[in-house]
Image (tube, rainbow, N blue to C red; front, top):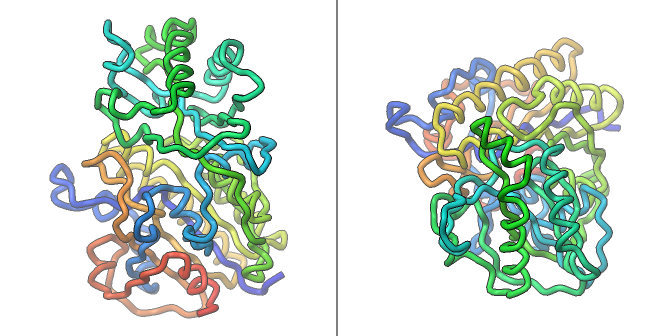
Length: 403
């Protein structure tokens, strides 16, 4: 056990662009963040590139980077990492695919002419989605294709002895007619079409529409990959780590890296997740002998995908007041010696409603080495600091003072 503790608070997709609705400020700059304002005055801030050149911007590659795993060496696809989290058995010849249950426009038109309205089906609950996926499994599952329930709208399809094919991310094509983005593979396309017929009039979706909620009416496959092989986080960095996240992807990275995974009741990856439960889980783990806690919050990313500047601001404020403030207060109250890294994994600008590869702002605080600065933590001032990390997978070394 290390005498010093290390914490990452990761606001997924938190970085953004200046928004006219917010007076030309980003959500991070506009939000009321007293805890971050206090910490930034005695911290290092700067910018870091988390997405290697030539790779797609995603929470998979970006979070691998933040945890010190160079995606160019370790990345084998998003879905296999999620499969690890939910205990899906995979052989080396299997291919895992993410199975989002999305909202199509359900117009009186051929399937190919539908529009993708919502990649998350209104942040549908896991309980509802499990029932919907069971209906799909009864009709479509066989020895080659097996479905597994994940969290909320995020599920998994295992393709036995499959192959890696190019598939479109649903959050990249929001509001567009789906025809150009459908799989070239005939079997996967057929399964998507059949899932739409199975789900569009399902009683759960009829009830959701009555309540003014988006129906979860189609399986969308993407993120194909093979079984991952990650080095042990503890052996690599010399510290024992715990992951606190509601997202199967992050839990899967942790499982693959041999980290502990803390289960927080009520953590749902939405705007109204259990923020208090997350910081308490981290603090408890640190007090009980864990050296490194990674607190992942999905809400800013989801609000970016929704295209809502105001809700993204709210997500940032919740992160500040309901995680960072009480956690640092608790650590200070017991005189814990700690280093804290706050950052996004990638931007999810409200304007484009999807991920980009731009660099993101980081804040690095050391309870034993307080600086005297004037800046606040946001994209503009982080750029003005002139601190720039070109390779995101090295930021863990800066946090752990290995570099």
